[in-house]
Image 1 (spheres, one colour):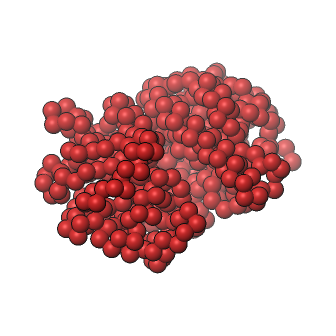
Image 2: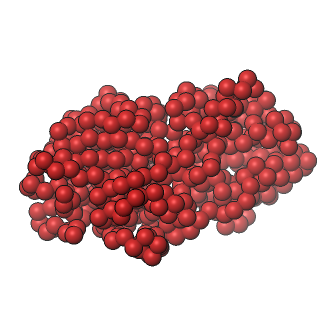
Image 3: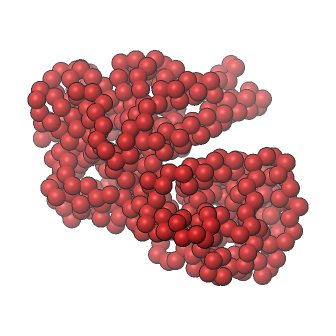
Length: 480
Protein backbone atom coordinates (compact mmCIF):
# COMPACT_ATOMS: atom_id res chain seq x y z
CA UNK A 1 0.00 0.00 0.00
CA UNK A 2 1.34 3.44 -0.92
CA UNK A 3 0.78 5.93 1.87
CA UNK A 4 1.05 9.68 1.66
CA UNK A 5 3.20 11.11 4.43
CA UNK A 6 2.13 13.86 6.74
CA UNK A 7 2.42 17.30 5.24
CA UNK A 8 4.39 18.70 8.20
CA UNK A 9 7.33 16.28 7.85
CA UNK A 10 7.60 14.96 4.31
CA UNK A 11 11.40 15.06 4.08
CA UNK A 12 12.58 13.20 7.20
CA UNK A 13 15.35 10.73 6.34
CA UNK A 14 13.88 7.78 8.30
CA UNK A 15 14.45 4.15 7.30
CA UNK A 16 12.01 4.00 4.42
CA UNK A 17 12.61 5.13 0.86
CA UNK A 18 10.41 8.01 -0.27
CA UNK A 19 9.52 9.95 -3.39
CA UNK A 20 8.27 13.54 -3.53
CA UNK A 21 6.71 15.11 -6.60
CA UNK A 22 8.24 18.58 -6.94
CA UNK A 23 6.98 19.18 -10.48
CA UNK A 24 4.99 17.84 -13.44
CA UNK A 25 2.29 16.78 -10.97
CA UNK A 26 -1.12 17.78 -12.32
CA UNK A 27 0.61 19.68 -15.12
CA UNK A 28 3.01 18.95 -17.98
CA UNK A 29 6.08 21.00 -17.08
CA UNK A 30 8.60 21.39 -14.25
CA UNK A 31 9.59 17.72 -13.94
CA UNK A 32 11.36 17.12 -10.58
CA UNK A 33 11.15 13.92 -8.54
CA UNK A 34 13.01 13.72 -5.24
CA UNK A 35 13.95 10.18 -4.20
CA UNK A 36 15.30 9.59 -0.69
CA UNK A 37 16.94 6.47 0.71
CA UNK A 38 19.55 5.77 3.39
CA UNK A 39 19.77 9.45 4.27
CA UNK A 40 20.70 10.37 0.66
CA UNK A 41 18.76 12.44 -1.86
CA UNK A 42 18.58 11.96 -5.62
CA UNK A 43 16.65 14.39 -7.84
CA UNK A 44 15.39 12.84 -11.08
CA UNK A 45 15.02 15.65 -13.65
CA UNK A 46 15.16 19.34 -12.82
CA UNK A 47 12.90 21.20 -15.21
CA UNK A 48 11.39 24.64 -15.56
CA UNK A 49 7.68 25.24 -15.17
CA UNK A 50 6.22 26.76 -18.33
CA UNK A 51 2.80 28.03 -19.31
CA UNK A 52 0.58 30.12 -17.06
CA UNK A 53 1.90 32.91 -14.83
CA UNK A 54 1.05 30.87 -11.73
CA UNK A 55 3.16 27.96 -12.97
CA UNK A 56 6.05 30.17 -14.03
CA UNK A 57 6.03 31.80 -10.60
CA UNK A 58 7.04 28.44 -9.11
CA UNK A 59 10.43 28.83 -10.82
CA UNK A 60 11.11 31.82 -8.55
CA UNK A 61 10.01 30.08 -5.35
CA UNK A 62 12.51 28.26 -3.16
CA UNK A 63 12.36 24.50 -3.15
CA UNK A 64 10.88 23.00 0.03
CA UNK A 65 14.30 21.51 0.81
CA UNK A 66 17.75 23.16 0.68
CA UNK A 67 19.36 22.44 -2.72
CA UNK A 68 22.59 21.84 -0.83
CA UNK A 69 20.98 18.77 0.76
CA UNK A 70 20.51 17.08 -2.64
CA UNK A 71 23.37 14.69 -3.39
CA UNK A 72 22.85 13.97 -7.10
CA UNK A 73 20.71 14.89 -10.12
CA UNK A 74 19.81 12.33 -12.79
CA UNK A 75 18.28 13.36 -16.14
CA UNK A 76 15.93 11.55 -18.53
CA UNK A 77 16.54 13.94 -21.46
CA UNK A 78 17.53 17.48 -22.38
CA UNK A 79 14.26 19.38 -22.89
CA UNK A 80 14.05 22.52 -20.79
CA UNK A 81 10.97 21.37 -18.87
CA UNK A 82 13.22 18.56 -17.59
CA UNK A 83 16.56 20.41 -17.25
CA UNK A 84 15.96 24.17 -17.29
CA UNK A 85 15.92 24.64 -13.51
CA UNK A 86 19.46 23.25 -13.12
CA UNK A 87 21.30 26.62 -13.12
CA UNK A 88 18.84 27.90 -10.50
CA UNK A 89 19.48 24.78 -8.39
CA UNK A 90 23.26 25.17 -8.61
CA UNK A 91 23.12 28.88 -7.82
CA UNK A 92 21.04 28.06 -4.73
CA UNK A 93 23.62 25.64 -3.35
CA UNK A 94 23.47 22.28 -5.13
CA UNK A 95 27.08 21.07 -5.36
CA UNK A 96 26.78 17.47 -6.57
CA UNK A 97 27.18 15.83 -9.99
CA UNK A 98 24.52 15.86 -12.70
CA UNK A 99 24.27 12.49 -14.46
CA UNK A 100 23.12 12.22 -18.08
CA UNK A 101 23.67 10.14 -21.21
CA UNK A 102 26.35 11.54 -23.58
CA UNK A 103 23.84 12.93 -26.10
CA UNK A 104 21.74 14.51 -23.34
CA UNK A 105 24.88 16.13 -21.94
CA UNK A 106 25.79 17.63 -25.32
CA UNK A 107 22.25 18.85 -25.95
CA UNK A 108 22.19 20.47 -22.51
CA UNK A 109 25.35 22.36 -23.42
CA UNK A 110 23.33 24.02 -26.19
CA UNK A 111 19.93 24.31 -24.50
CA UNK A 112 21.00 25.60 -21.07
CA UNK A 113 23.20 28.29 -22.59
CA UNK A 114 20.36 29.32 -24.86
CA UNK A 115 17.86 29.30 -21.99
CA UNK A 116 20.13 31.51 -19.89
CA UNK A 117 20.60 33.90 -22.79
CA UNK A 118 16.82 34.18 -23.17
CA UNK A 119 16.44 34.77 -19.42
CA UNK A 120 18.88 37.68 -19.63
CA UNK A 121 17.17 39.07 -22.73
CA UNK A 122 13.75 38.88 -21.04
CA UNK A 123 15.11 40.78 -18.03
CA UNK A 124 16.54 43.51 -20.28
CA UNK A 125 13.25 43.79 -22.16
CA UNK A 126 11.30 43.99 -18.90
CA UNK A 127 13.60 46.75 -17.73
CA UNK A 128 13.12 48.64 -20.98
CA UNK A 129 9.33 48.33 -20.86
CA UNK A 130 9.07 48.79 -17.09
CA UNK A 131 6.62 45.95 -16.45
CA UNK A 132 8.60 43.87 -13.93
CA UNK A 133 7.89 43.81 -10.20
CA UNK A 134 11.66 43.60 -9.62
CA UNK A 135 13.83 46.72 -9.58
CA UNK A 136 15.89 46.18 -11.61
CA UNK A 137 14.35 43.15 -13.35
CA UNK A 138 16.47 40.04 -12.85
CA UNK A 139 16.91 36.94 -14.99
CA UNK A 140 15.95 33.62 -13.43
CA UNK A 141 19.60 32.75 -14.00
CA UNK A 142 22.51 34.07 -16.02
CA UNK A 143 24.73 32.69 -18.77
CA UNK A 144 27.58 32.56 -16.23
CA UNK A 145 25.42 30.41 -13.91
CA UNK A 146 24.58 28.10 -16.81
CA UNK A 147 28.27 27.73 -17.59
CA UNK A 148 28.98 26.81 -13.96
CA UNK A 149 26.18 24.25 -14.10
CA UNK A 150 27.62 22.59 -17.20
CA UNK A 151 30.85 21.82 -15.31
CA UNK A 152 28.82 19.56 -12.98
CA UNK A 153 27.75 17.14 -15.72
CA UNK A 154 28.98 13.56 -15.64
CA UNK A 155 28.16 11.10 -18.42
CA UNK A 156 26.63 7.68 -17.76
CA UNK A 157 26.43 4.75 -20.22
CA UNK A 158 23.69 4.92 -22.85
CA UNK A 159 22.34 1.45 -22.09
CA UNK A 160 24.32 -0.16 -19.27
CA UNK A 161 23.85 -0.11 -15.51
CA UNK A 162 25.61 2.64 -13.59
CA UNK A 163 26.14 2.80 -9.83
CA UNK A 164 25.52 6.25 -8.38
CA UNK A 165 25.99 5.26 -4.73
CA UNK A 166 25.34 2.29 -2.43
CA UNK A 167 21.71 3.46 -2.34
CA UNK A 168 21.10 4.10 -6.05
CA UNK A 169 21.95 2.48 -9.37
CA UNK A 170 20.39 3.23 -12.75
CA UNK A 171 20.04 1.70 -16.20
CA UNK A 172 18.87 3.97 -19.06
CA UNK A 173 16.65 2.57 -21.83
CA UNK A 174 15.74 4.13 -25.19
CA UNK A 175 12.66 6.36 -24.92
CA UNK A 176 12.55 7.39 -28.61
CA UNK A 177 11.53 10.98 -27.81
CA UNK A 178 14.59 13.05 -28.77
CA UNK A 179 18.28 12.30 -29.12
CA UNK A 180 19.61 10.81 -25.87
CA UNK A 181 16.18 10.49 -24.28
CA UNK A 182 15.80 7.62 -21.82
CA UNK A 183 13.35 6.01 -19.53
CA UNK A 184 15.19 5.16 -16.35
CA UNK A 185 15.21 1.97 -14.33
CA UNK A 186 16.31 3.09 -10.87
CA UNK A 187 17.22 0.47 -8.27
CA UNK A 188 17.07 1.65 -4.67
CA UNK A 189 18.95 -0.42 -2.08
CA UNK A 190 18.10 0.15 1.56
CA UNK A 191 18.36 -2.11 4.61
CA UNK A 192 19.47 -4.99 2.38
CA UNK A 193 16.35 -4.79 0.23
CA UNK A 194 15.89 -3.49 -3.30
CA UNK A 195 13.11 -1.42 -4.84
CA UNK A 196 12.86 -0.89 -8.60
CA UNK A 197 11.35 2.42 -9.77
CA UNK A 198 10.81 3.16 -13.46
CA UNK A 199 10.69 6.79 -14.65
CA UNK A 200 9.23 7.02 -18.15
CA UNK A 201 10.64 10.45 -18.90
CA UNK A 202 8.97 11.56 -22.13
CA UNK A 203 8.12 8.60 -24.33
CA UNK A 204 8.42 8.92 -28.07
CA UNK A 205 6.42 7.31 -30.83
CA UNK A 206 6.72 4.02 -32.65
CA UNK A 207 7.80 3.63 -36.27
CA UNK A 208 9.17 7.16 -36.56
CA UNK A 209 12.29 8.11 -38.54
CA UNK A 210 15.84 8.49 -37.18
CA UNK A 211 15.45 7.30 -33.57
CA UNK A 212 14.85 3.82 -32.20
CA UNK A 213 11.40 2.93 -30.90
CA UNK A 214 10.82 3.15 -27.13
CA UNK A 215 12.31 0.07 -25.51
CA UNK A 216 9.76 -2.16 -23.80
CA UNK A 217 9.82 -2.26 -19.99
CA UNK A 218 9.56 -5.56 -18.10
CA UNK A 219 9.01 -4.96 -14.41
CA UNK A 220 8.93 -2.33 -11.69
CA UNK A 221 7.79 -2.02 -8.11
CA UNK A 222 6.79 1.58 -8.75
CA UNK A 223 6.21 3.32 -12.07
CA UNK A 224 6.07 7.01 -13.00
CA UNK A 225 4.44 7.35 -16.43
CA UNK A 226 4.03 10.52 -18.46
CA UNK A 227 0.51 11.41 -19.65
CA UNK A 228 1.00 14.31 -22.07
CA UNK A 229 -1.36 12.77 -24.63
CA UNK A 230 -3.12 10.44 -22.22
CA UNK A 231 -6.54 11.44 -23.56
CA UNK A 232 -5.99 11.23 -27.31
CA UNK A 233 -4.07 9.82 -30.24
CA UNK A 234 -2.38 11.72 -33.02
CA UNK A 235 -4.16 12.02 -36.38
CA UNK A 236 -3.74 9.25 -38.91
CA UNK A 237 -2.33 9.99 -42.34
CA UNK A 238 0.99 9.94 -44.15
CA UNK A 239 3.45 12.71 -43.26
CA UNK A 240 5.35 12.36 -46.58
CA UNK A 241 2.10 12.52 -48.56
CA UNK A 242 0.95 15.68 -46.78
CA UNK A 243 4.38 17.33 -47.04
CA UNK A 244 4.61 16.57 -50.73
CA UNK A 245 1.12 17.90 -51.39
CA UNK A 246 1.72 21.22 -49.63
CA UNK A 247 5.17 21.76 -51.15
CA UNK A 248 4.06 20.98 -54.70
CA UNK A 249 1.00 23.22 -54.49
CA UNK A 250 3.02 26.11 -53.06
CA UNK A 251 5.81 25.73 -55.61
CA UNK A 252 3.26 25.81 -58.45
CA UNK A 253 1.94 29.09 -57.07
CA UNK A 254 5.48 30.47 -56.96
CA UNK A 255 5.46 30.88 -53.18
CA UNK A 256 7.62 29.96 -50.19
CA UNK A 257 6.85 27.32 -47.55
CA UNK A 258 7.67 28.71 -44.11
CA UNK A 259 7.90 26.07 -41.38
CA UNK A 260 8.15 27.28 -37.77
CA UNK A 261 9.99 24.35 -36.19
CA UNK A 262 11.46 23.22 -32.89
CA UNK A 263 15.25 23.07 -33.08
CA UNK A 264 15.56 19.71 -31.31
CA UNK A 265 14.01 16.77 -33.10
CA UNK A 266 11.41 18.39 -35.35
CA UNK A 267 13.84 20.13 -37.69
CA UNK A 268 15.87 16.93 -38.13
CA UNK A 269 12.73 14.87 -38.84
CA UNK A 270 11.60 17.38 -41.45
CA UNK A 271 14.99 17.33 -43.18
CA UNK A 272 14.87 13.53 -43.27
CA UNK A 273 11.42 13.53 -44.92
CA UNK A 274 12.42 16.24 -47.41
CA UNK A 275 15.51 14.26 -48.41
CA UNK A 276 13.40 11.13 -48.99
CA UNK A 277 10.83 13.06 -51.06
CA UNK A 278 13.58 14.54 -53.22
CA UNK A 279 15.17 11.13 -53.78
CA UNK A 280 11.80 9.73 -54.81
CA UNK A 281 11.26 12.75 -57.10
CA UNK A 282 7.98 13.51 -55.37
CA UNK A 283 8.90 17.16 -54.83
CA UNK A 284 11.03 19.58 -56.87
CA UNK A 285 14.57 20.30 -55.72
CA UNK A 286 13.92 23.61 -54.00
CA UNK A 287 16.43 25.58 -51.95
CA UNK A 288 15.91 24.77 -48.26
CA UNK A 289 17.03 27.35 -45.69
CA UNK A 290 17.60 26.07 -42.15
CA UNK A 291 17.61 29.42 -40.39
CA UNK A 292 18.33 28.51 -36.77
CA UNK A 293 21.86 28.27 -35.37
CA UNK A 294 20.50 26.05 -32.59
CA UNK A 295 18.86 23.66 -35.07
CA UNK A 296 22.07 23.50 -37.11
CA UNK A 297 24.13 22.60 -34.04
CA UNK A 298 21.56 20.03 -32.94
CA UNK A 299 21.56 18.46 -36.41
CA UNK A 300 25.30 17.93 -36.08
CA UNK A 301 24.67 16.08 -32.80
CA UNK A 302 21.96 13.94 -34.37
CA UNK A 303 24.39 12.82 -37.04
CA UNK A 304 27.24 12.09 -34.62
CA UNK A 305 25.32 10.07 -32.02
CA UNK A 306 24.79 6.95 -34.09
CA UNK A 307 23.97 4.89 -30.98
CA UNK A 308 20.44 6.33 -31.05
CA UNK A 309 19.78 5.70 -34.76
CA UNK A 310 17.24 3.12 -35.88
CA UNK A 311 18.04 0.48 -38.51
CA UNK A 312 16.50 2.35 -41.45
CA UNK A 313 18.41 5.55 -40.71
CA UNK A 314 21.63 3.54 -40.24
CA UNK A 315 21.10 1.90 -43.65
CA UNK A 316 20.55 5.32 -45.19
CA UNK A 317 23.79 6.59 -43.63
CA UNK A 318 25.77 3.60 -44.85
CA UNK A 319 24.14 3.39 -48.27
CA UNK A 320 26.53 5.78 -50.00
CA UNK A 321 23.78 8.19 -51.06
CA UNK A 322 24.92 11.13 -48.98
CA UNK A 323 23.78 12.69 -45.74
CA UNK A 324 20.18 11.61 -44.96
CA UNK A 325 19.57 14.93 -43.15
CA UNK A 326 20.61 17.12 -46.08
CA UNK A 327 18.61 17.90 -49.21
CA UNK A 328 20.12 18.66 -52.62
CA UNK A 329 20.29 22.43 -52.06
CA UNK A 330 20.46 23.23 -48.36
CA UNK A 331 21.59 26.52 -46.85
CA UNK A 332 22.54 26.48 -43.16
CA UNK A 333 22.24 30.14 -42.17
CA UNK A 334 24.03 30.92 -38.93
CA UNK A 335 24.57 34.68 -39.13
CA UNK A 336 21.97 37.45 -38.96
CA UNK A 337 23.16 38.76 -42.32
CA UNK A 338 22.63 35.36 -43.96
CA UNK A 339 19.16 35.23 -42.42
CA UNK A 340 18.26 38.65 -43.82
CA UNK A 341 19.35 37.61 -47.31
CA UNK A 342 16.55 35.01 -47.41
CA UNK A 343 14.15 37.96 -47.75
CA UNK A 344 15.59 38.54 -51.23
CA UNK A 345 14.62 35.06 -52.46
CA UNK A 346 11.64 35.47 -54.78
CA UNK A 347 11.49 31.99 -56.31
CA UNK A 348 9.87 29.00 -54.53
CA UNK A 349 11.80 27.82 -51.48
CA UNK A 350 11.41 26.16 -48.07
CA UNK A 351 12.34 28.05 -44.89
CA UNK A 352 12.68 26.12 -41.62
CA UNK A 353 13.18 28.42 -38.65
CA UNK A 354 12.58 28.71 -34.92
CA UNK A 355 10.62 29.15 -32.80
CA UNK A 356 8.20 26.31 -33.36
CA UNK A 357 5.28 28.12 -31.69
CA UNK A 358 6.03 31.48 -33.36
CA UNK A 359 6.75 32.97 -29.95
CA UNK A 360 10.06 34.56 -30.94
CA UNK A 361 13.17 33.96 -32.98
CA UNK A 362 14.07 34.46 -36.62
CA UNK A 363 10.87 32.89 -37.94
CA UNK A 364 9.06 36.12 -37.04
CA UNK A 365 11.04 38.02 -39.69
CA UNK A 366 10.22 35.42 -42.33
CA UNK A 367 6.54 35.50 -41.44
CA UNK A 368 6.46 39.29 -41.62
CA UNK A 369 7.83 38.95 -45.16
CA UNK A 370 5.78 35.94 -46.36
CA UNK A 371 2.41 36.05 -44.55
CA UNK A 372 1.01 38.85 -46.78
CA UNK A 373 1.85 36.77 -49.90
CA UNK A 374 -1.10 34.61 -50.96
CA UNK A 375 1.22 32.36 -52.96
CA UNK A 376 3.06 31.23 -49.83
CA UNK A 377 2.24 28.67 -47.14
CA UNK A 378 2.89 28.55 -43.39
CA UNK A 379 3.13 24.95 -42.23
CA UNK A 380 2.53 24.27 -38.51
CA UNK A 381 4.25 21.06 -37.44
CA UNK A 382 4.03 21.03 -33.65
CA UNK A 383 1.94 21.80 -30.61
CA UNK A 384 0.88 25.46 -30.46
CA UNK A 385 0.37 26.74 -26.92
CA UNK A 386 -2.45 29.05 -25.95
CA UNK A 387 -1.41 32.66 -26.53
CA UNK A 388 1.31 31.83 -29.05
CA UNK A 389 1.48 33.17 -32.58
CA UNK A 390 1.13 29.63 -33.86
CA UNK A 391 -2.12 29.14 -31.97
CA UNK A 392 -3.45 32.39 -33.45
CA UNK A 393 -2.73 31.15 -37.00
CA UNK A 394 -4.14 27.75 -36.11
CA UNK A 395 -7.38 29.41 -35.04
CA UNK A 396 -7.70 31.42 -38.25
CA UNK A 397 -6.33 34.86 -37.32
CA UNK A 398 -6.57 37.38 -40.14
CA UNK A 399 -3.69 39.45 -38.75
CA UNK A 400 -0.63 38.47 -36.71
CA UNK A 401 1.12 41.04 -34.55
CA UNK A 402 4.87 40.89 -35.28
CA UNK A 403 7.33 43.41 -33.86
CA UNK A 404 4.54 45.85 -33.08
CA UNK A 405 2.95 45.66 -36.53
CA UNK A 406 -0.30 43.98 -37.60
CA UNK A 407 0.74 41.71 -40.46
CA UNK A 408 -2.11 40.51 -42.73
CA UNK A 409 -2.45 36.73 -43.08
CA UNK A 410 -2.96 36.04 -46.78
CA UNK A 411 -0.70 33.01 -47.01
CA UNK A 412 -2.22 29.55 -46.74
CA UNK A 413 -1.92 28.08 -43.21
CA UNK A 414 -1.78 24.29 -42.94
CA UNK A 415 -1.11 21.94 -40.04
CA UNK A 416 0.59 18.52 -40.02
CA UNK A 417 -0.25 17.24 -36.57
CA UNK A 418 1.26 13.76 -37.02
CA UNK A 419 4.78 15.07 -36.36
CA UNK A 420 4.46 15.09 -32.55
CA UNK A 421 7.42 13.55 -30.68
CA UNK A 422 5.19 12.42 -27.77
CA UNK A 423 3.51 9.04 -27.59
CA UNK A 424 -0.24 9.21 -28.06
CA UNK A 425 -2.68 7.42 -25.78
CA UNK A 426 -2.58 4.06 -27.59
CA UNK A 427 1.23 4.24 -27.78
CA UNK A 428 1.45 4.86 -24.04
CA UNK A 429 -0.75 1.81 -23.46
CA UNK A 430 1.40 -0.20 -25.86
CA UNK A 431 4.51 0.68 -23.83
CA UNK A 432 2.76 -0.14 -20.55
CA UNK A 433 1.73 -3.54 -21.93
CA UNK A 434 5.40 -4.56 -21.82
CA UNK A 435 5.32 -5.01 -18.05
CA UNK A 436 5.31 -8.71 -17.23
CA UNK A 437 3.75 -8.07 -13.82
CA UNK A 438 1.75 -5.12 -12.49
CA UNK A 439 3.74 -2.42 -10.69
CA UNK A 440 2.73 -2.14 -7.04
CA UNK A 441 1.74 1.44 -7.81
CA UNK A 442 1.62 3.52 -10.98
CA UNK A 443 1.94 7.29 -10.66
CA UNK A 444 0.66 9.33 -13.60
CA UNK A 445 2.60 12.54 -14.16
CA UNK A 446 3.48 15.10 -16.85
CA UNK A 447 -0.06 15.73 -18.05
CA UNK A 448 -2.96 18.13 -17.76
CA UNK A 449 -5.92 16.97 -15.62
CA UNK A 450 -8.07 15.77 -18.53
CA UNK A 451 -5.20 13.69 -19.97
CA UNK A 452 -4.23 12.32 -16.54
CA UNK A 453 -7.77 11.21 -15.74
CA UNK A 454 -8.30 9.65 -19.16
CA UNK A 455 -5.09 7.62 -18.96
CA UNK A 456 -5.87 6.55 -15.40
CA UNK A 457 -9.25 5.23 -16.53
CA UNK A 458 -7.65 3.42 -19.47
CA UNK A 459 -4.93 1.81 -17.33
CA UNK A 460 -7.34 0.64 -14.65
CA UNK A 461 -9.75 -0.68 -17.29
CA UNK A 462 -7.17 -2.45 -19.47
CA UNK A 463 -4.59 -3.60 -16.91
CA UNK A 464 -6.45 -3.40 -13.56
CA UNK A 465 -3.43 -1.74 -11.93
CA UNK A 466 -3.59 0.59 -8.93
CA UNK A 467 -3.07 4.13 -10.23
CA UNK A 468 -2.38 7.36 -8.36
CA UNK A 469 -2.32 10.92 -9.70
CA UNK A 470 0.03 12.68 -7.24
CA UNK A 471 -0.42 16.27 -6.15
CA UNK A 472 2.30 18.91 -6.32
CA UNK A 473 4.81 18.38 -3.47
CA UNK A 474 3.06 15.21 -2.29
CA UNK A 475 5.32 12.53 -0.77
CA UNK A 476 4.87 8.74 -0.80
CA UNK A 477 6.61 5.86 0.94
CA UNK A 478 8.27 3.33 -1.35
CA UNK A 479 7.87 0.09 0.57
CA UNK A 480 10.28 -2.74 -0.29
